[in-house]
Amino acid sequence: MDLLSNLALGFGVAVTPANMLYAFIGTLIGTLIGVLPGIGPVATIAMLLPVTYGLPPVTALIMLAGIYYGASYGGSTTAILVNLPGEMSSVVTVLDGYQMAKQGRAGAALCIAALGSLFAGCVATLVIAAFAPPLAELALQFDAAEYFSLMVMGLVSAIALAHGSVLKAVLMTILGLLLGSIGTDVNTGTARFSFEIPELIDGIGFVAMTMGLFAFAEIAGNLERSETRSVVTERISSLWIKWAEFKQAFPAVLRGTAIGSLLGILPGGGATLSSFASYTVEKRMADDPSRFGKGAIEGVAGPESANNAGAQTSFIPMLTLGIPSNAVMALMVGALIIHDIQPGPEVMSNNPELFWGLVVSMWVGNVMLVVLNLPLIGVWIKLLRVPYRLLYPMILLVCTIGAFSTNNNMFDVWVAMAFGLLGYVFAKLGCEPAPLLLGYILGPMLEENLRRALVLSRGDFSVFVTRPISLAMLAVAAVLLAAILAPAVRRKRDIVFTEEA
Image (cartoon, rainbow, N blue to C red; front, top):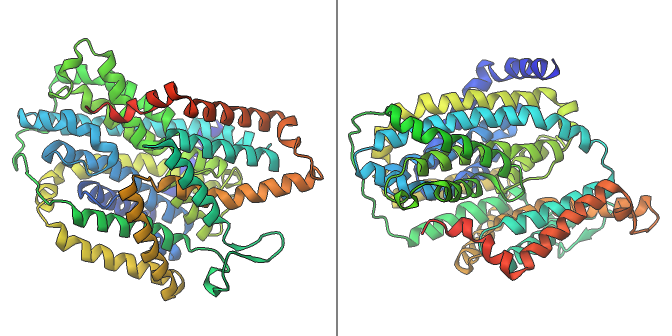
């Protein structure tokens, strides 16, 4: 009964005209950035954070969430039609979706992507509604030692699941922790590493840093790439799917939904890892794996369901524990802090309207995505013809205005530009910026809980291993660390991300 009453509360919040409008705006913007390669939800949410200052917290979160799962959906359209993934999570959709389009089956591919995303989104929302409350109740039993161990486990998990080199992921996380230590010490009130620059007394601006690392750096990288784009067709005869294809695809939708719902909860997981893992599973379970890469409908149904489910269940650790599972969730944590809401288990008890309103808005948003996207496919095709050289000045202008408007200070613009240059260098070196952002967000909380635990235990470090929950989380972190350092396991770790061959 509690679940039903909570969902009723959520419906009362989510279906108000204002929140419905912002859910629509979020899903529309998300679909648009998913269709347009080279922008991405992280950069877009970073750009729009200043816009949310004047909105109620629940309305702001509903719009930002719509951008995230809308982008996960929109990326499939270009992946299928023009062999160009709008999002990283849609990379594997290219493999079979584009081949289906070349065979005249673009309508079936788009239809199963839409239906699979809708089904997965609805199931993932139920998972959030069912599992988030008990997880939040467990988190209420946490003390400083448990929070410290939880954040250690989250950082190690993010390293284990990050793309590319483990060493680079570790170094990026450490750099994030160091950047998070800049500013005023919470305990002593002393300025640290500010180099007598007044603007750094409160630390590096979160919005300016994220805009630089993701938006500015992405623009610089895209300007280097070729703009060759080839549209498959402007006419799609049918947007429906044959019954035989539906029966073939539905088991993949179920498996993709399960994989995405599980992996989305893990730090560093989310939509991208879920889609790659789903494609790997489908290929290995197929009676004839050679069909994959040649237009297998399971190769579209599984990953598209997984990335939508993963995008939504990644809200669970952010809302219940205050631990962001990926870069987008780190931005969501930043949005909560901007609105004076402390992320963690108290969100559900102190702000039930925000929590349940956001959960129910995901149902509303998923229905909007299907209704919105299928009729607009022709529009997206035309939009893809706009040269990037005409788009990037507008993006750059919005980013600069957003960075300046945070504190009405040019210093934030220079910070954004500096991090843009740094992000560009990271891209050249193959270093993923997401672990840096997670380290930056979790670093101050990690330090604060470490010091608080030591104060409460009078300097006794054994407090972290004598408390059962803390010990269990440190043990999980140690196992993960040992696994990613083992050569055999490290080789297998990359299979999910290289299966596209």
